Length: 448
Ligand code: AMP
Ligand code: GLY
Image (cartoon, rainbow, N blue to C red; front, side, top):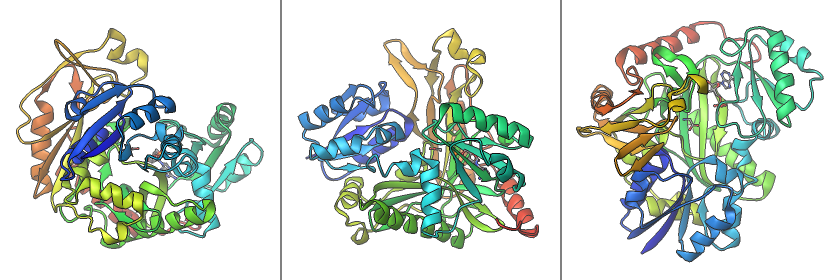
Protein backbone atom coordinates (compact mmCIF):
# COMPACT_ATOMS: atom_id res chain seq x y z
CA UNK A 1 0.00 0.00 0.00
CA UNK A 2 1.25 3.49 -0.85
CA UNK A 3 -0.19 6.36 1.19
CA UNK A 4 0.06 9.52 -0.92
CA UNK A 5 -0.53 13.04 0.37
CA UNK A 6 -1.90 15.49 -2.15
CA UNK A 7 -1.95 19.18 -1.27
CA UNK A 8 -4.29 21.38 -3.27
CA UNK A 9 -7.96 21.79 -4.09
CA UNK A 10 -8.27 22.72 -7.78
CA UNK A 11 -8.95 20.94 -11.06
CA UNK A 12 -5.21 20.48 -11.50
CA UNK A 13 -5.14 18.53 -8.25
CA UNK A 14 -8.24 16.59 -9.26
CA UNK A 15 -6.28 15.45 -12.34
CA UNK A 16 -3.29 14.60 -10.12
CA UNK A 17 -5.57 12.65 -7.78
CA UNK A 18 -6.88 10.65 -10.72
CA UNK A 19 -3.31 9.89 -11.88
CA UNK A 20 -2.42 8.72 -8.35
CA UNK A 21 -5.45 6.44 -8.22
CA UNK A 22 -4.62 4.90 -11.62
CA UNK A 23 -1.32 3.65 -10.14
CA UNK A 24 -0.73 -0.06 -9.75
CA UNK A 25 1.10 0.53 -6.43
CA UNK A 26 -2.01 0.17 -4.27
CA UNK A 27 -2.45 3.91 -3.74
CA UNK A 28 -4.27 5.42 -0.80
CA UNK A 29 -4.95 9.09 -1.25
CA UNK A 30 -4.92 11.63 1.57
CA UNK A 31 -5.89 15.13 0.49
CA UNK A 32 -5.08 18.36 2.29
CA UNK A 33 -7.29 21.09 0.83
CA UNK A 34 -8.12 24.73 1.44
CA UNK A 35 -11.71 24.04 0.40
CA UNK A 36 -13.45 20.74 -0.15
CA UNK A 37 -13.13 19.67 -3.79
CA UNK A 38 -15.79 16.97 -4.22
CA UNK A 39 -13.85 15.28 -7.04
CA UNK A 40 -10.68 14.93 -4.97
CA UNK A 41 -12.66 14.01 -1.85
CA UNK A 42 -14.40 11.18 -3.71
CA UNK A 43 -11.02 9.65 -4.63
CA UNK A 44 -9.50 10.12 -1.16
CA UNK A 45 -9.39 7.83 1.84
CA UNK A 46 -9.43 11.01 3.91
CA UNK A 47 -9.67 14.68 3.06
CA UNK A 48 -8.60 17.32 5.54
CA UNK A 49 -9.41 21.00 5.25
CA UNK A 50 -6.84 23.58 6.34
CA UNK A 51 -4.66 26.50 5.36
CA UNK A 52 -1.63 26.09 3.10
CA UNK A 53 0.53 28.12 5.47
CA UNK A 54 -0.38 25.85 8.39
CA UNK A 55 2.71 23.68 7.98
CA UNK A 56 2.23 22.13 11.39
CA UNK A 57 -1.22 20.78 10.46
CA UNK A 58 0.06 19.47 7.11
CA UNK A 59 3.06 17.69 8.68
CA UNK A 60 0.91 16.26 11.49
CA UNK A 61 -1.56 14.84 8.93
CA UNK A 62 1.31 13.36 6.88
CA UNK A 63 2.90 11.75 9.95
CA UNK A 64 -0.40 10.41 11.21
CA UNK A 65 -1.12 8.74 7.86
CA UNK A 66 2.47 7.49 7.37
CA UNK A 67 2.70 9.20 4.00
CA UNK A 68 5.20 7.66 1.56
CA UNK A 69 5.04 10.41 -1.06
CA UNK A 70 3.68 13.95 -0.91
CA UNK A 71 2.66 15.76 -4.10
CA UNK A 72 2.29 19.51 -3.93
CA UNK A 73 -0.19 21.01 -6.41
CA UNK A 74 -0.23 24.81 -6.06
CA UNK A 75 2.51 27.36 -5.53
CA UNK A 76 1.39 28.80 -2.17
CA UNK A 77 2.40 25.82 0.00
CA UNK A 78 5.72 25.64 -1.89
CA UNK A 79 6.30 29.33 -1.18
CA UNK A 80 5.52 28.70 2.50
CA UNK A 81 8.18 25.96 2.63
CA UNK A 82 5.95 22.90 2.95
CA UNK A 83 8.55 20.68 1.27
CA UNK A 84 11.20 21.75 3.82
CA UNK A 85 8.79 21.08 6.70
CA UNK A 86 7.86 17.64 5.34
CA UNK A 87 11.53 16.77 4.76
CA UNK A 88 12.31 17.61 8.39
CA UNK A 89 9.70 15.03 9.35
CA UNK A 90 11.26 12.49 6.97
CA UNK A 91 8.48 12.71 4.36
CA UNK A 92 9.68 13.00 0.77
CA UNK A 93 7.84 15.30 -1.62
CA UNK A 94 7.51 16.03 -5.31
CA UNK A 95 8.08 19.77 -5.27
CA UNK A 96 10.98 22.11 -4.62
CA UNK A 97 12.12 23.44 -1.25
CA UNK A 98 11.25 27.01 -0.43
CA UNK A 99 14.62 28.31 -1.63
CA UNK A 100 14.26 26.51 -4.96
CA UNK A 101 10.63 27.54 -5.38
CA UNK A 102 12.08 31.03 -5.93
CA UNK A 103 12.21 29.86 -9.54
CA UNK A 104 8.52 30.80 -9.49
CA UNK A 105 8.16 33.13 -6.53
CA UNK A 106 10.92 35.53 -7.54
CA UNK A 107 11.04 36.78 -11.13
CA UNK A 108 14.38 38.49 -10.44
CA UNK A 109 15.95 35.28 -9.07
CA UNK A 110 15.16 33.41 -12.29
CA UNK A 111 16.21 36.18 -14.67
CA UNK A 112 19.49 36.61 -12.74
CA UNK A 113 20.12 32.85 -12.74
CA UNK A 114 19.81 32.66 -16.53
CA UNK A 115 22.07 35.65 -16.92
CA UNK A 116 24.73 34.43 -14.48
CA UNK A 117 24.95 30.98 -16.07
CA UNK A 118 24.70 32.38 -19.63
CA UNK A 119 21.57 30.41 -20.41
CA UNK A 120 19.74 31.71 -23.48
CA UNK A 121 16.07 32.72 -23.28
CA UNK A 122 16.04 35.98 -21.32
CA UNK A 123 14.55 39.09 -22.88
CA UNK A 124 16.41 42.34 -22.11
CA UNK A 125 15.60 43.03 -18.45
CA UNK A 126 16.68 44.76 -15.27
CA UNK A 127 15.61 44.38 -11.67
CA UNK A 128 14.97 47.52 -9.66
CA UNK A 129 14.43 48.05 -5.95
CA UNK A 130 13.92 51.81 -6.32
CA UNK A 131 12.72 54.07 -9.17
CA UNK A 132 16.29 55.27 -9.84
CA UNK A 133 17.37 54.30 -13.36
CA UNK A 134 13.98 53.02 -14.52
CA UNK A 135 13.24 55.93 -16.93
CA UNK A 136 16.60 55.50 -18.70
CA UNK A 137 16.14 51.73 -19.02
CA UNK A 138 12.58 52.04 -20.34
CA UNK A 139 13.71 54.65 -22.90
CA UNK A 140 15.85 51.97 -24.56
CA UNK A 141 13.00 49.46 -25.03
CA UNK A 142 10.31 49.47 -27.71
CA UNK A 143 7.75 47.81 -25.43
CA UNK A 144 7.91 47.02 -21.73
CA UNK A 145 6.52 44.47 -19.29
CA UNK A 146 6.53 45.08 -15.52
CA UNK A 147 6.69 42.21 -13.05
CA UNK A 148 6.42 42.64 -9.29
CA UNK A 149 8.81 40.44 -7.31
CA UNK A 150 6.99 37.81 -5.24
CA UNK A 151 3.89 35.67 -5.71
CA UNK A 152 1.00 37.60 -7.21
CA UNK A 153 -1.36 34.79 -8.15
CA UNK A 154 -0.55 35.22 -11.85
CA UNK A 155 -2.26 38.59 -11.99
CA UNK A 156 0.56 41.00 -11.20
CA UNK A 157 2.23 41.29 -14.62
CA UNK A 158 1.57 44.52 -16.54
CA UNK A 159 2.08 44.53 -20.30
CA UNK A 160 2.43 47.68 -22.40
CA UNK A 161 -0.38 47.89 -24.94
CA UNK A 162 -2.67 45.83 -22.67
CA UNK A 163 -2.49 47.38 -19.22
CA UNK A 164 -0.89 50.74 -19.97
CA UNK A 165 0.27 52.65 -23.03
CA UNK A 166 2.97 55.26 -22.39
CA UNK A 167 6.41 55.22 -20.71
CA UNK A 168 5.04 57.76 -18.19
CA UNK A 169 2.30 55.31 -17.22
CA UNK A 170 4.93 52.55 -16.93
CA UNK A 171 6.89 54.70 -14.46
CA UNK A 172 3.79 55.43 -12.40
CA UNK A 173 3.04 51.66 -12.26
CA UNK A 174 6.65 50.94 -11.19
CA UNK A 175 6.37 53.43 -8.33
CA UNK A 176 3.13 51.78 -7.23
CA UNK A 177 4.59 48.25 -7.45
CA UNK A 178 7.63 49.33 -5.40
CA UNK A 179 5.32 50.54 -2.64
CA UNK A 180 3.95 46.99 -2.14
CA UNK A 181 6.81 44.74 -3.31
CA UNK A 182 10.54 44.51 -2.62
CA UNK A 183 11.35 44.92 -6.31
CA UNK A 184 10.16 45.15 -9.88
CA UNK A 185 11.57 43.47 -12.96
CA UNK A 186 11.31 45.65 -16.05
CA UNK A 187 11.70 43.74 -19.28
CA UNK A 188 11.42 43.98 -23.03
CA UNK A 189 8.01 43.05 -24.41
CA UNK A 190 8.37 39.99 -26.61
CA UNK A 191 6.14 39.12 -29.53
CA UNK A 192 5.24 35.57 -30.48
CA UNK A 193 3.15 32.58 -29.45
CA UNK A 194 3.24 31.19 -25.94
CA UNK A 195 3.51 27.54 -24.99
CA UNK A 196 3.75 25.68 -21.70
CA UNK A 197 6.43 23.03 -21.35
CA UNK A 198 5.88 21.17 -18.08
CA UNK A 199 9.11 19.33 -17.28
CA UNK A 200 9.84 16.80 -14.55
CA UNK A 201 13.14 17.08 -12.75
CA UNK A 202 14.91 14.87 -10.20
CA UNK A 203 17.80 17.28 -9.73
CA UNK A 204 19.83 16.02 -12.69
CA UNK A 205 17.57 14.55 -15.35
CA UNK A 206 14.89 16.72 -16.95
CA UNK A 207 12.04 15.09 -18.87
CA UNK A 208 9.56 17.10 -20.92
CA UNK A 209 5.86 16.33 -21.09
CA UNK A 210 3.91 17.24 -24.27
CA UNK A 211 3.74 21.01 -24.90
CA UNK A 212 0.40 22.70 -24.26
CA UNK A 213 -1.05 26.08 -25.19
CA UNK A 214 -3.09 27.85 -22.53
CA UNK A 215 -5.57 30.70 -23.16
CA UNK A 216 -5.26 33.38 -20.51
CA UNK A 217 -7.68 35.93 -21.88
CA UNK A 218 -11.21 35.78 -20.59
CA UNK A 219 -13.08 36.10 -23.89
CA UNK A 220 -13.01 34.54 -27.35
CA UNK A 221 -10.41 35.77 -29.78
CA UNK A 222 -8.04 36.54 -26.90
CA UNK A 223 -9.97 39.57 -25.70
CA UNK A 224 -10.66 40.83 -22.20
CA UNK A 225 -8.67 40.59 -18.99
CA UNK A 226 -6.06 37.94 -18.17
CA UNK A 227 -7.32 35.04 -16.07
CA UNK A 228 -5.78 31.96 -14.46
CA UNK A 229 -6.42 30.22 -17.82
CA UNK A 230 -9.69 29.55 -19.67
CA UNK A 231 -8.58 26.35 -21.36
CA UNK A 232 -5.78 24.68 -23.25
CA UNK A 233 -4.96 22.12 -25.91
CA UNK A 234 -2.23 19.69 -26.90
CA UNK A 235 -1.68 17.69 -30.07
CA UNK A 236 -1.27 14.00 -30.86
CA UNK A 237 2.23 14.53 -32.30
CA UNK A 238 3.35 16.12 -29.00
CA UNK A 239 4.06 19.40 -30.80
CA UNK A 240 1.78 22.39 -31.41
CA UNK A 241 0.59 23.62 -34.81
CA UNK A 242 2.89 26.67 -34.71
CA UNK A 243 5.76 24.89 -32.99
CA UNK A 244 8.57 22.81 -34.51
CA UNK A 245 10.34 19.96 -32.74
CA UNK A 246 13.41 22.22 -32.57
CA UNK A 247 11.42 24.84 -30.59
CA UNK A 248 10.39 22.25 -27.99
CA UNK A 249 13.99 21.02 -27.84
CA UNK A 250 15.12 24.60 -27.22
CA UNK A 251 12.69 24.97 -24.29
CA UNK A 252 13.85 21.64 -22.85
CA UNK A 253 17.51 22.57 -23.22
CA UNK A 254 16.94 25.88 -21.40
CA UNK A 255 15.19 23.97 -18.60
CA UNK A 256 18.03 21.40 -18.37
CA UNK A 257 20.55 24.18 -18.01
CA UNK A 258 18.39 25.97 -15.43
CA UNK A 259 18.10 22.75 -13.38
CA UNK A 260 21.87 22.43 -13.41
CA UNK A 261 22.40 26.11 -12.61
CA UNK A 262 20.02 25.94 -9.66
CA UNK A 263 21.89 22.93 -8.27
CA UNK A 264 25.23 24.70 -8.61
CA UNK A 265 23.86 27.91 -7.18
CA UNK A 266 22.18 26.37 -4.11
CA UNK A 267 23.83 22.95 -3.74
CA UNK A 268 20.34 21.42 -3.58
CA UNK A 269 18.79 19.26 -6.33
CA UNK A 270 15.46 20.48 -7.71
CA UNK A 271 12.92 17.68 -7.34
CA UNK A 272 9.60 18.49 -8.87
CA UNK A 273 7.95 20.18 -11.81
CA UNK A 274 9.68 22.93 -13.76
CA UNK A 275 6.94 24.40 -15.87
CA UNK A 276 8.44 26.79 -18.39
CA UNK A 277 6.15 29.40 -19.86
CA UNK A 278 7.92 30.04 -23.16
CA UNK A 279 7.29 32.25 -26.14
CA UNK A 280 8.45 31.26 -29.58
CA UNK A 281 9.53 34.48 -31.28
CA UNK A 282 11.22 35.39 -34.56
CA UNK A 283 14.48 35.33 -32.58
CA UNK A 284 13.96 31.87 -31.13
CA UNK A 285 12.46 30.53 -27.91
CA UNK A 286 12.33 32.97 -24.99
CA UNK A 287 11.46 32.36 -21.36
CA UNK A 288 8.45 34.22 -19.97
CA UNK A 289 8.57 32.60 -16.54
CA UNK A 290 8.98 29.37 -14.62
CA UNK A 291 6.41 27.84 -12.34
CA UNK A 292 7.42 25.31 -9.71
CA UNK A 293 4.32 23.15 -10.24
CA UNK A 294 2.05 21.79 -12.95
CA UNK A 295 -0.08 24.28 -14.85
CA UNK A 296 -3.77 24.73 -14.26
CA UNK A 297 -5.34 23.93 -16.79
CA UNK A 298 -2.28 22.35 -18.48
CA UNK A 299 -2.06 19.44 -16.00
CA UNK A 300 -5.47 18.31 -17.27
CA UNK A 301 -4.05 17.98 -20.81
CA UNK A 302 -1.07 15.85 -19.99
CA UNK A 303 -1.83 13.75 -16.90
CA UNK A 304 -4.72 11.79 -18.48
CA UNK A 305 -2.27 10.80 -21.27
CA UNK A 306 0.44 9.55 -18.91
CA UNK A 307 1.13 5.86 -19.52
CA UNK A 308 3.87 5.59 -16.89
CA UNK A 309 2.72 4.70 -13.37
CA UNK A 310 2.37 8.04 -11.54
CA UNK A 311 3.64 6.74 -8.21
CA UNK A 312 6.70 5.21 -9.93
CA UNK A 313 7.25 8.60 -11.52
CA UNK A 314 7.03 10.40 -8.17
CA UNK A 315 9.45 7.93 -6.59
CA UNK A 316 11.92 8.33 -9.48
CA UNK A 317 11.82 12.12 -9.01
CA UNK A 318 12.38 11.82 -5.27
CA UNK A 319 15.15 9.20 -5.54
CA UNK A 320 16.96 10.84 -8.47
CA UNK A 321 16.24 7.92 -10.81
CA UNK A 322 14.33 9.67 -13.62
CA UNK A 323 17.02 8.75 -16.11
CA UNK A 324 16.16 5.06 -15.84
CA UNK A 325 12.38 5.47 -16.08
CA UNK A 326 10.56 5.53 -19.43
CA UNK A 327 8.12 8.43 -19.12
CA UNK A 328 5.50 7.94 -21.81
CA UNK A 329 2.37 9.72 -22.96
CA UNK A 330 -0.37 8.53 -25.28
CA UNK A 331 -0.27 10.06 -28.75
CA UNK A 332 -3.67 11.73 -28.47
CA UNK A 333 -4.91 15.30 -28.85
CA UNK A 334 -6.55 16.99 -25.87
CA UNK A 335 -8.73 20.05 -25.45
CA UNK A 336 -9.56 21.43 -22.01
CA UNK A 337 -12.27 24.04 -21.53
CA UNK A 338 -13.03 25.72 -18.25
CA UNK A 339 -16.60 26.38 -17.25
CA UNK A 340 -16.56 29.63 -15.26
CA UNK A 341 -19.17 31.84 -13.58
CA UNK A 342 -20.31 34.54 -16.03
CA UNK A 343 -18.72 37.21 -13.83
CA UNK A 344 -15.30 35.49 -13.71
CA UNK A 345 -12.42 37.80 -14.52
CA UNK A 346 -14.43 40.97 -14.01
CA UNK A 347 -13.72 43.39 -11.17
CA UNK A 348 -15.47 41.93 -8.10
CA UNK A 349 -18.21 44.57 -7.94
CA UNK A 350 -19.45 43.35 -11.35
CA UNK A 351 -19.04 39.67 -10.63
CA UNK A 352 -22.05 37.59 -9.72
CA UNK A 353 -20.20 36.34 -6.63
CA UNK A 354 -21.61 39.48 -5.05
CA UNK A 355 -25.04 37.85 -5.20
CA UNK A 356 -23.81 34.70 -3.42
CA UNK A 357 -22.74 31.36 -4.85
CA UNK A 358 -24.75 30.00 -7.78
CA UNK A 359 -25.87 26.46 -8.35
CA UNK A 360 -24.87 24.50 -11.43
CA UNK A 361 -25.95 21.22 -12.89
CA UNK A 362 -23.47 19.00 -14.63
CA UNK A 363 -25.13 17.15 -17.49
CA UNK A 364 -24.01 14.19 -19.53
CA UNK A 365 -20.26 14.49 -20.09
CA UNK A 366 -20.51 12.31 -23.23
CA UNK A 367 -17.04 10.85 -23.00
CA UNK A 368 -15.22 13.96 -21.72
CA UNK A 369 -13.25 13.97 -18.47
CA UNK A 370 -14.52 16.26 -15.77
CA UNK A 371 -12.34 17.93 -13.15
CA UNK A 372 -13.82 20.02 -10.37
CA UNK A 373 -12.20 23.30 -9.47
CA UNK A 374 -13.90 25.90 -7.24
CA UNK A 375 -16.98 23.86 -6.48
CA UNK A 376 -18.76 23.42 -3.22
CA UNK A 377 -20.87 20.30 -2.84
CA UNK A 378 -23.90 20.85 -0.65
CA UNK A 379 -26.78 18.53 0.10
CA UNK A 380 -28.90 20.20 -2.58
CA UNK A 381 -26.25 20.24 -5.29
CA UNK A 382 -23.09 21.84 -6.64
CA UNK A 383 -22.36 25.52 -6.05
CA UNK A 384 -19.76 27.72 -7.73
CA UNK A 385 -17.64 30.34 -6.03
CA UNK A 386 -16.37 33.34 -8.01
CA UNK A 387 -13.53 31.35 -9.58
CA UNK A 388 -13.13 28.74 -12.34
CA UNK A 389 -15.69 26.02 -11.62
CA UNK A 390 -15.20 22.88 -13.71
CA UNK A 391 -12.64 21.82 -16.30
CA UNK A 392 -13.72 19.40 -19.02
CA UNK A 393 -11.26 17.58 -21.25
CA UNK A 394 -11.86 15.97 -24.63
CA UNK A 395 -9.31 13.36 -25.69
CA UNK A 396 -9.19 11.99 -29.26
CA UNK A 397 -6.89 11.06 -32.11
CA UNK A 398 -7.35 14.47 -33.75
CA UNK A 399 -7.61 17.94 -32.27
CA UNK A 400 -10.92 18.72 -34.02
CA UNK A 401 -12.57 15.69 -32.43
CA UNK A 402 -11.11 16.45 -28.99
CA UNK A 403 -12.54 19.97 -29.34
CA UNK A 404 -16.00 18.63 -30.23
CA UNK A 405 -15.98 16.33 -27.20
CA UNK A 406 -14.93 19.16 -24.86
CA UNK A 407 -17.42 21.63 -26.32
CA UNK A 408 -20.33 19.17 -26.06
CA UNK A 409 -19.45 18.49 -22.42
CA UNK A 410 -18.97 22.10 -21.33
CA UNK A 411 -22.27 23.18 -22.91
CA UNK A 412 -23.99 20.41 -20.93
CA UNK A 413 -23.21 22.31 -17.71
CA UNK A 414 -26.24 24.38 -16.73
CA UNK A 415 -26.27 27.55 -14.65
CA UNK A 416 -25.00 31.15 -14.88
CA UNK A 417 -21.84 29.94 -16.60
CA UNK A 418 -19.65 30.78 -19.54
CA UNK A 419 -16.68 29.29 -21.40
CA UNK A 420 -14.47 30.02 -24.39
CA UNK A 421 -15.97 28.35 -27.44
CA UNK A 422 -12.94 29.09 -29.60
CA UNK A 423 -10.29 27.08 -27.71
CA UNK A 424 -8.95 24.28 -29.90
CA UNK A 425 -11.01 25.35 -32.95
CA UNK A 426 -9.57 25.59 -36.42
CA UNK A 427 -9.94 29.38 -36.92
CA UNK A 428 -8.05 30.19 -33.70
CA UNK A 429 -5.30 27.67 -34.47
CA UNK A 430 -4.96 29.08 -37.98
CA UNK A 431 -4.57 32.55 -36.46
CA UNK A 432 -1.69 31.30 -34.29
CA UNK A 433 0.05 29.72 -37.28
CA UNK A 434 -0.36 32.87 -39.37
CA UNK A 435 0.88 35.04 -36.50
CA UNK A 436 4.10 33.05 -36.35
CA UNK A 437 4.50 33.03 -40.14
CA UNK A 438 4.16 36.81 -40.16
CA UNK A 439 6.66 37.32 -37.33
CA UNK A 440 9.24 35.08 -38.96
CA UNK A 441 9.04 37.26 -42.09
CA UNK A 442 9.69 40.52 -40.18
CA UNK A 443 13.27 41.63 -39.54
CA UNK A 444 14.48 40.42 -36.12
CA UNK A 445 14.71 43.34 -33.65
CA UNK A 446 18.25 43.96 -32.46
CA UNK A 447 19.15 42.90 -28.94
CA UNK A 448 16.17 40.51 -28.84
P1 AMP B 1 3.25 35.70 -16.06
O1 AMP B 1 2.49 36.07 -14.84
O2 AMP B 1 4.73 35.87 -15.96
O3 AMP B 1 2.79 34.38 -16.66
O4 AMP B 1 2.83 36.73 -17.18
C1 AMP B 1 1.50 36.84 -17.58
C2 AMP B 1 1.45 37.07 -19.05
O5 AMP B 1 2.14 38.27 -19.38
C3 AMP B 1 2.18 36.01 -19.86
O6 AMP B 1 1.41 34.88 -20.09
C4 AMP B 1 2.47 36.76 -21.13
O7 AMP B 1 1.33 36.76 -21.96
C5 AMP B 1 2.72 38.16 -20.65
N1 AMP B 1 4.18 38.42 -20.57
C6 AMP B 1 5.00 38.21 -19.53
N2 AMP B 1 6.25 38.58 -19.84
C7 AMP B 1 6.23 39.02 -21.11
C8 AMP B 1 7.22 39.56 -22.02
N3 AMP B 1 8.49 39.72 -21.66
N4 AMP B 1 6.80 39.90 -23.26
C9 AMP B 1 5.52 39.77 -23.64
N5 AMP B 1 4.55 39.29 -22.84
C10 AMP B 1 4.89 38.92 -21.59
N1 GLY C 1 -1.91 28.08 -16.76
C1 GLY C 1 -1.20 29.04 -16.02
C2 GLY C 1 -0.66 28.58 -14.74
O1 GLY C 1 -0.89 27.47 -14.28
O2 GLY C 1 0.06 29.35 -14.13
